[in-house]
Length: 354
Image 1 (cartoon, rainbow, N blue to C red):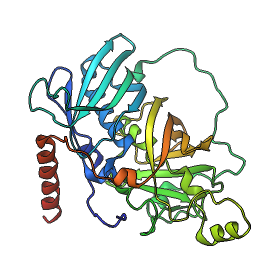
Image 2: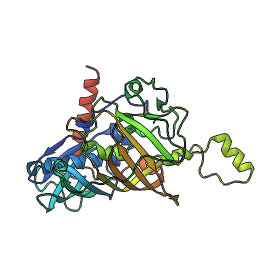
Image 3: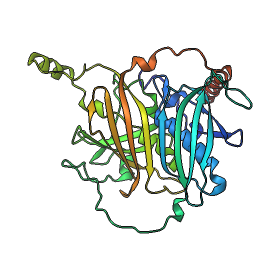
């Protein structure tokens, strides 16, 4: 499947809509257009949990995520999911909560889950606060996006939106790209330096949401995981691979190999809250320190339009054959989940013909 296989675009606000159904229980419907193959993007699901956390601690005025740690225990799937939150420690300045996302054999009322059948998919710890009330020592650190081969200067964002900036251009996905099955990529519009990245080891991009929505604090989970594709920057071209083989050199992987960069652990630390009405543009820098034995680390810096640091993110990812993603799932999904997903899909199809 390639990126042109579906024209469906579900806005972030709809795709992450969370409903409170109990004192500490929330329900969300994971949608297909935010998937990589058959699996919802890990950052997208993290954003769903962030939405639940924000809603959960809204009465305490602690709607900013200071730090979040996500453990991906099993593959999630489209359809209904239940998020159960435990108040670990509620404080005046900081509150710590534990969130667990469940799927399969879900019930329509308490206790919501079926012991022995319902599966824990993601476990998370989140530290929540109100960043507007932070005060204390502030010192300069000299931080900036320095690199031996820096990207072009900051773009004219008005011109960039129309793809006429002289230094940056919209990234367009070839229909035959190895990442063609990652439908979640359609939800962002990516911009790269004209002529390509200056370095294949450090990736700089400007991004905006394809739906026209603005980035908010809840989107940071998805933004942190929207481009975990550092391996793709070193994908060998077919002719180069042939030349390397003739010279007896090791080709790292086949030019047409399709990988799934599954998230094992995702951490997000917020440095600065975004405005309540959000921002249109964000800048990201993605870098891996080591790619070895099918495992990679990922560091993601997220900055706003003025170059101020918004968030840091660190990942542990595995590099798996894409067939692991596309393989048939075992039985166990609840009828409620299937019905809800079918209904949501039918509604979106009907709306697309209106």
